[in-house]
Length: 497
Image 1 (tube, one colour):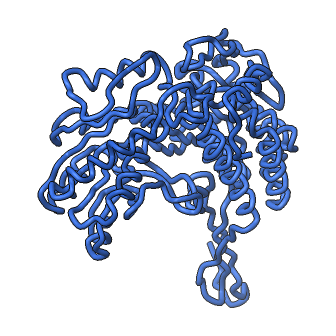
Image 2 (tube, rainbow, N blue to C red):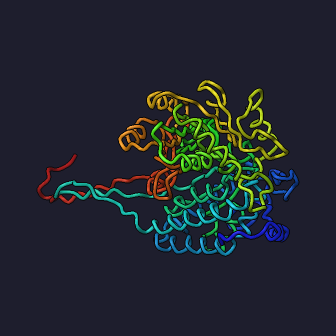
Image 3 (cartoon, rainbow, N blue to C red):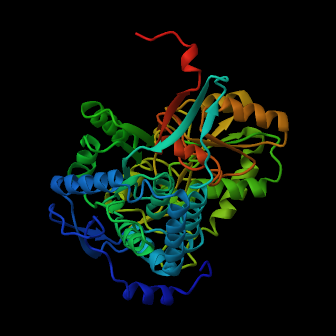
């Protein structure tokens, strides 16, 4: 599947797509009560299709059906091995429909088809499969309670989970949420971003084909006021797992406080540093990581390293190599596999990102043409808004430092703490710096987010309440119960009461 086709072949697939157009509730597509909205192709501005939006009544119906499925045990009480088998069948169906899903994702989000084919679809499958395999391999515990008692510590599914998704990685973030949530036995209601609802709806349809019981996975398209807020305030929702902006994350905390104090897990923004010290080896390799970290997915990535904090001793040599690398990062039609960068998500976001360049002379790039912004390199000081605010676009700010201590102080001078990268040839410096940076994921001499086995989430205003990925993800989707069994001899005990 990861073999790339030609632009014309992808266009032919696009022309034959049958787009899902309705909410998926209780095992079937369902007419939404919130009217319709158009989902647009970011690259052209043209309408792909119209989708039925959900209303508060639809949210109530979905929560009721999710609760029924959970309490009846259609999914929650299945043997974990049975849940595993169904989720693996879902992975096989996603694999079988991979090209359709990749093209749908590219059209809907503006993502380059090469990333959809080689990264997003394979990682989506891998994530769901990994959690499927974990379903019957997570053991409960017993505590050292002595001879007179057995203390069991068991995990139980939370119940009804609302998963609220961002628009930048629609399929992959769907997998990050539903993989552990479903493997743990929960009923899940997905609220996709209104800009990118298509692939979530299609996966829900495939999940039913795989054998997932009705009511266990439902998808409610619509906007924040129509769907997101009702889910956040709903007394029948047990937890919300949210990925998106810090501003919206705050709202979900308020919704929980105003309703049933449901669990809330937030994965929010980032202003992540790439720290390059003066002893960094192989600056060509460093430049490749820095460019990928800043511009992958058009910079529309919460873990993007949008600040390059570089020692003055290697700055000029590194910038020369970065600018040379940028020549290979072609920007244009997302369906053309030659392009590394596609379209920004919509016109409003384009203008917001471009506004950061007002009055700035770029070292490289900076040209906005329609929905496309060239990968852009600018030099700033640490206090400039480009160096402090999450731009969520293909702009890399370069900040020059004189010492490693200065680099670390600037790296931590942010309200965010999601990710960071450190480049140095000295092992002691690397480990010391990795411990000093206040971030949830720190990579050394590379850029990345770890993998499915490692927890992902942030410090400070980048995250709250839990982690995605790895076995740590199950902490948010399960409750911990202690069962204490008294084994002492009743005859040897004094009367109670």
